[in-house]
Length: 433
Image (cartoon, rainbow, N blue to C red; front, top):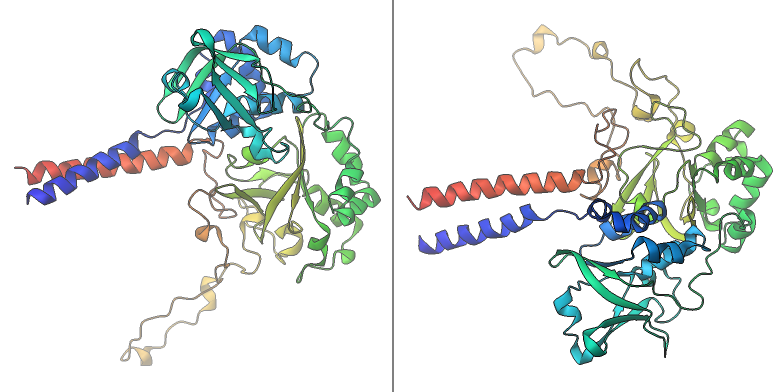
């Protein structure tokens, strides 16, 4: 009995820890500090805040408005984004740890290293204990000067999030060389990345002009690689009308800026340039760990790489052509009033109650269990089989009214854990009586 009590007690403690875990929100934290308002604004503009919030352990080195003004004065948003990434350490550092580094120095990984744009160790930062009790930060470049020094701690959430103020940004030659959307030749960028077929289609159809017009306000493009156009089972795109081809190509773009980290946070249907309302021609995201896929309702396509990330434009490559079910789902019947065609499974027209013959009285003696009709076999990759951290089911006609709540999954997990904790606590209390 004593062993059972101990087991229940330990279980309660473990679940209590789970229940108390909440995803941090760096912009919400900095909202309470006016001296970091410019830094916080750029976190939102560049979407680096989404990358920080997605990390379970992270240290954010923040700059005052004066230091931030000097940094951004002559930089593009893409370059500012890289500077903010280099100021984001993928480990937990509080004042105590900073002043007790093993050997007095340490090389730590930053968000910039995870982009794949860093050469060698240039995505790392050198932290060193200097004379007079100071702590300096420098790039990993050999002989680099310690441009930034630790000033004070702003916020500590052991051992998940630490926000530390530093005196200056950390830079190195070559950090500010990101391609900008304004100077980018979109077709040349796509062709160089192995998306020549897609580039040719957007030019010949004139859709490239639609893309260019959207770039000022926000555009995210999903470009299939050349292999995707030779995939087995791909419909014959040459049979599409000119209007349908335009719709297909517009379906490969979002009218908003969504880098990969931000895609992970989006729930529910995402309007594309082809969207007409009522969920038609929308996409959704399935995310698992660092993998992100776009779900059309018919198939999923993995986001393979990012060719351009320059606020407000992001260009990603995908492994397959995105096929909207409105064009390729074979659902000719219009949806009933109040329900979009996108919400009706293409392969399964609604069953009619009158289609089944009435049972004959002579069969009453031998009653058999009626077999449930399978009107539509579930797709192998239906949302019901999606990962737990994926967005809600697509096309079920009942989108969540909290689709834009980035912390919805966390809230559910916390609520569930809290319920279990209460139950376990009750068991423990009852067993001790």
